[in-house]
Structures are given as C-alpha cells and as structure tokens.
Length: 158
Image (cartoon, rainbow, N blue to C red; front, side, top):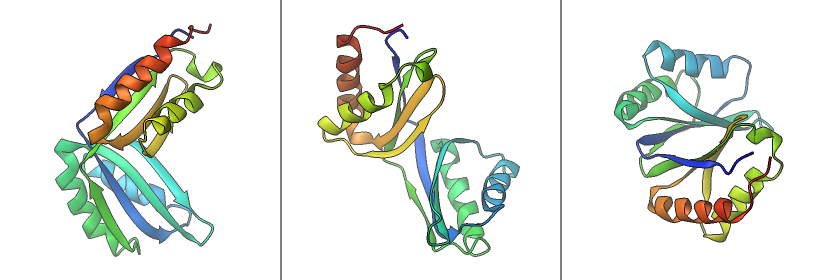
C-alpha cells in the first residue's frame, strides 16, 4: 500500500437515535424513510442490543441536517426511541488508499495517532480503501497534521 491520502469532510452533521428497540427491521424503517425523503446518509454506526435497545448514529450533509432532524423528530415516537440528537460541530477525516484492507495496522495507527493528540473519536467507519473517523471540528487541523506526520514518516508498505 502506498502512503494513504488524507481526506476531510467539514460539511456534515451527526444524528443519533437514542435507545430504540433492537429488533429486525428497525434499520430498514429508519433508513428507508430517510431515503424516501431524499436524504443521503454518508456513514452510520449502531451499538447496543444487549439490553434489547440500540442506538444508531449517522452523518448527513449539513444542507440536509434540518430536514433530517425534523423527520427524526416525527419518527421518534413510532420508533419508540427515547430521543434524537444532532451535532453540527463534527468533521470526518479519512485515510484513503488502494488495498488498505490488505495492510495490517492502519486503523490502529490512525486511532493511536488521534489518541496521542488527545482527540476523541466519535464514530468510525471502514471500507477496503478507507478508514474514516468523525471527530470534533475543533481538532480538524491538529488531526490532519498528526496523521500526515504519522503516515509520511513511515515507509510505504506494498
């Protein structure tokens, strides 16, 4: 793998649906309704399940944030969710490279680098070619500089 490219997305908002039932079809309901409303989701995570409840977070473009939040507010009761929340002060920072999934340790190095800088990771997403973290927007420049230093200082692996 060549050294990864660092990419950022500063025009996102994070939405979270808190404590909704963990049951088959709940994700289909949520993301089906968002899609029907013409709202594009760029990344998502889900957690929980042990207590029969789950939390789902996802990002949308800032241009869709108000419309998404309105829809989530109307869906909250029918989903039996405790509440919904929105964060506007987040950014996504990604390491992108072909065949990244075949290079051990990239995600760990990224997470360790951000941790060393005192930057908390809010969400994580990974594909075969990218690892993306959502972090507080105050730390964008610091995160980008630290990742650049980390990945340019080490020899590229093939």
